[in-house]
Figure 1 (cartoon, rainbow, N blue to C red):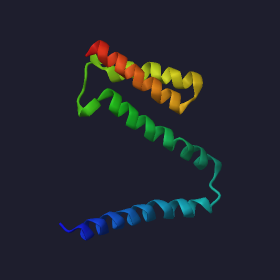
Figure 2 (cartoon, helix red, strand yellow):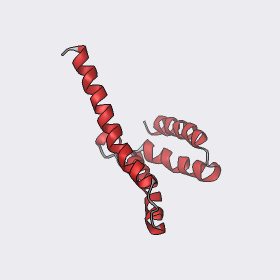
Figure 3 (spheres, rainbow, N blue to C red):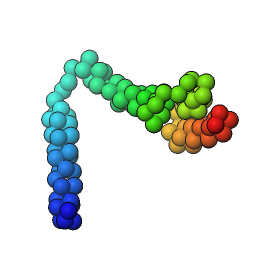
Figure 4 (cartoon, rainbow, N blue to C red):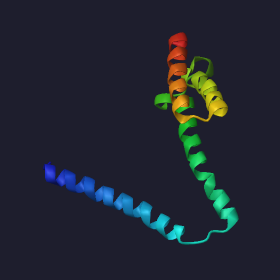
Length: 108
């Protein structure tokens, strides 16, 4: 495959992706949405993030692990508590990495 073809496809996919995401946001930003719709939309980011995290915690690498042998699950619980207590994304990320490494060493 030629390099120019690959770059054309990459740029084309980027433009299409941007257009498909930007146009609805631009149109909705000009509208005054009813309060119930605004409230409902406010839960979308949390729902998406939860679905991604829970899927990876319960099925790391696409396979089920027994709960008592799952370091991801053991690390997720105290990591959630760290976020609940301090509301720091960076601190929670660092704590999650440390918790995971500790539990992987203990359970591995």
